[in-house]
Length: 315
Image 1: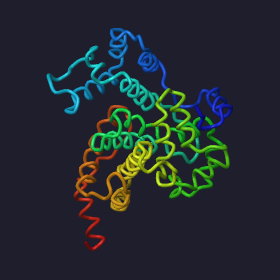
Image 2 (image 1 turned 90 degrees about the vertical axis):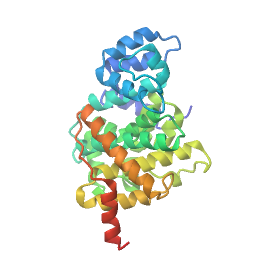
Image 3 (image 1 turned 90 degrees about the horizontal axis):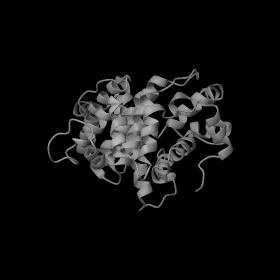
Image 4 (image 1 turned 60 degrees about the horizontal axis):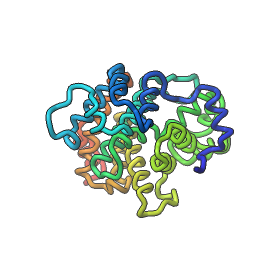
């Protein structure tokens, strides 16, 4: 299977023990979920030792699209089979990265904004998956969470070098092609390449690795226009723009909403869907941020922001 970055470079990063990675009980849960002959009884015991992970699994199990019967109040073998072990593994990874994060001293890297946007993007990716299908919502949540993990990896493993890269790019360009060009020049790979390599190393299906790799510019990816790879990359692209809307300061929120309306597939400017998604993601973002101790701002009703946008544009 082709590598996303040179294996020698990747091993050097791993040996420094600075890359974000799951550990402890959650790492054990991830490993157990990959076993064909896993003991569900033992897995239940492991998850019961992790209240945050257990609570999230129960919430997903009580989702209207999954559970049609009696509300779930505790982890059991039946709950794990209903959710699916792949989803449990993805959730263990997602929660591990947010709750056991280590912030380094990389100058110019805004860790607070990074984590706030990361959790918002994960919530948005999950909501989009529920609206449009294409992939399990829990897997899209994890993909949204990991989409920019390469930036954190570089900030943690190469703080001085990455600070130099960040200082060479204007703040307004740090989400775009200029940043990736500067990363490529400095390291030989971009934060998207590193994110995909980290995901591959954690045994996440290549479909999602490639969606993350191309999510910043799906239209320039060269992916087949009818492929599932492209549709997932497009969903992650839109999830990122929703996340930008979530973290935007009040004075930039109207502009961020316009960017979302202009984002293309799969929303294609459908106003009612944009409103419903932003309101839903805003609620989920606040809930998740509280769960993993990340700062998030309460968002106004999206219809109010849309009204401001229309007033400014004279519509």
